Image (cartoon, rainbow, N blue to C red; front, side):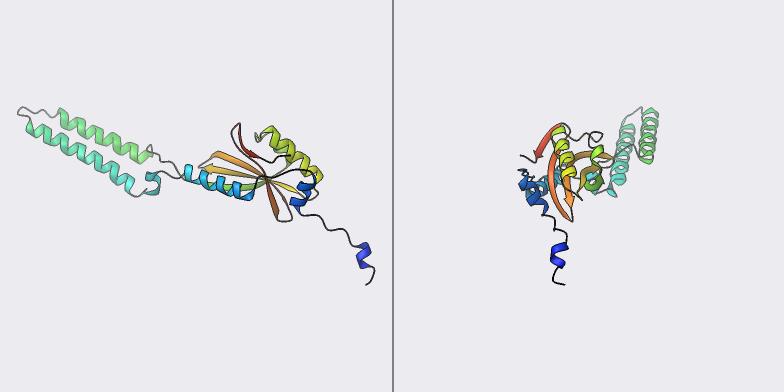
Length: 188
């Protein structure tokens, strides 16, 4: 129809253009990718986590070596008493119980998780104020936008979060922080 263009709703501007109109320069995707990769390397799994099948063998092997050395020492003594043998056996039992109970823990690797969050949760999630203020402002001004919180997790501990603004599949990074320290932040 010839008049369809007159009644069609205007197409929204890309998110980067909306931010540029407001004078906001987001954290670049390259900076976010570099940061994410460096944190994965920094919080990589320990040697023993990567080689879990050999951990029990190594611990039991060390106990066996201790038992053998205790037995050899007892045999070498002229008037050797059975005390050293019983101590070695007792120590082996303690180590075996500790291994069985899982006391020897190893550090797991880290991974990134992302989730949508409402702007009202930013304070409760300890998002630095300068990032939270900008995020709240943009979610009000950019219709259809959502916030995505990315978190580097190691077991159940959050190590290093970042905040994205998303609309229609387009994402921009508003900030990266570690605890109270802001690593990168969108600027005006």
